[in-house]
Image (cartoon, rainbow, N blue to C red; front, side, top):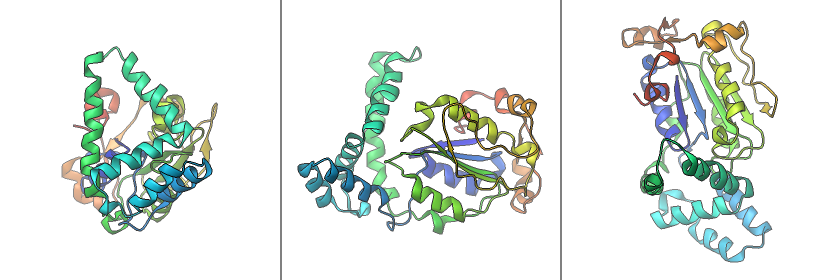
Length: 278
């Protein structure tokens, strides 16, 4: 399965479109949807939050930047991101306590490695302007593999509204859209238990097969709730991670909508493969 998060979901959509033979399904979280510069949902919401909070200086700065991201400098991107995070308490708390907190407490990393996180974010800001003119609708809304979106209900960085609009236009053998309650950006880190439930639900596509719709579920997943069920599955399939994917030799048949061939489950693969990185 191909799991793409935040800015990586821009790349993820292209992998899912152009190389469906490599993956069982696409899962986007903190999904980033560009509409060729037509959508300004996040920008307008930021202006509203700054105005409501009475932050006149910040409001003036963001107003000066303007909604056209293709015209932004790297400094504009940096300022916009800073104000977006700082103006939303849930997003700010998530980055401070969950993202940075995880980095500080991770047994796999040392404190000396923390600057790498900042450098990575700076790199994203450098390539962000190149993505501003991408139009995901023009790139294509047809996917030959199951298509899932698990988005934070209160995401102010990649708001769920434009993501939902794109999802509604997507054609796929199976598709599902679920919101994670009390979550902004980094929803999978804020509520890993709910995200895992949704991931396990997505694994049931093998039992469903192609051509059986999930119904475009738009409900929110809260504490103690499970993700949208996929018809015809059982717990053995969920926890056994049964999987079918399309190998390169099956690419032609996959694009014609045929049933994919069996392959090893993600439990048999390395962590880079499970993340869709190898």
